Image 1 (cartoon, rainbow, N blue to C red):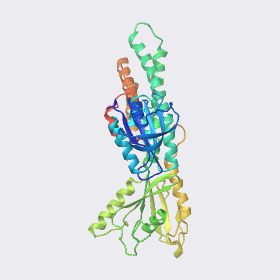
Image 2 (spheres, one colour; image 1 turned 30 degrees about the horizontal axis):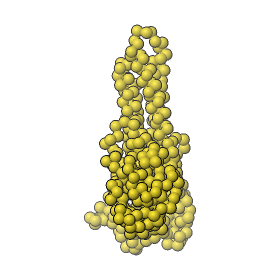
Image 3 (cartoon, rainbow, N blue to C red; image 1 turned 180 degrees about the horizontal axis):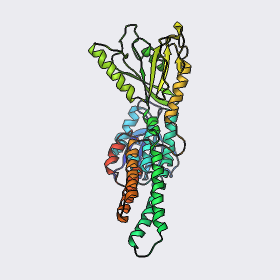
Image 4 (cartoon, rainbow, N blue to C red; image 1 turned 30 degrees about the vertical axis):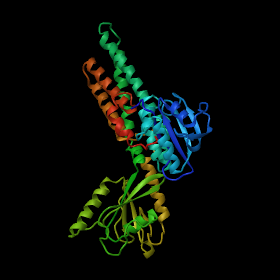
Length: 429
């Protein structure tokens, strides 16, 4: 299938002024010539009339010829900037099929770019993250990974592991050469240093993954304190039913907002109280479960309701209904979901919490569970290497650590994950 010539619309679906059609594969030049008769010079945009095999005009389009390997996919490619009408796009697609091309599968262009060495697997994943980015913070993280910052960290570790393996092999192959003891001591010390650096990289509180996937903030509290009204106010739309009747919210309701440049899912939960109502009791159980899993809990109470918030990095305390009067406890943020008083201050506080949970200094953070699992395996192999009593066993542990690192960038053993990864992409990528 990698020898097929493929095509797809890379721009969005629906009616638009322009639709960009991408073509890639070994027959791209022949296919392009069949459409527009005259292929423009490489990387020069030219206006051409596109015709089908019968000579019927399909469109007047801007055409680009992009010979490999200096193209996105690393192979001969072309782009057609068509008028965006459905009839135009469909007509050109039919003509491409008649010329021997086939529609691309999801992510196939980027998969070919990876297989042709145009990018490593981390950069390919970053392309998908960039396409899916909802906020500026997600965009910045994806661009940083696409530029190779994360891959550079892992390749640096891989280079050091290769050097360690060479030194360890020398200790194995030349046992009678009286190599200075400093050689083995240096190997052991470098293993410890590498393991320490990996441990620090892993101890990032999942900041990169949280930013990529979005945070979850659970809104909890007793019945009738205004949780649903607060969620509606923060979302600036009616998400949950607001009623004076206790126990109105029986299940967890979710809505997506952006706080501090970070996508956040607000979860409105059932009021926390003892109840004999079976359905409401299940709602309370689910509320407690969501609070336990959430990145942050927004604990809501009525102003003047008594009690003093306990300091907790994972909880923001909110005293609602300040429009009714009453003292706001120290450590809580006073708001009125009804009038909007105090909501700007609460948004700022929640935005600060969202940034604190996702921002990172230093090397770029891990962005996927796949990276974390491979890096944890590499770190575990280095622990085994430190404990190995025989040089042959240490060498094997170093090799396995290097192999685990290679799976992150796609240098070794990735065939089993390629299909699952690129299936998540849009067709034109």
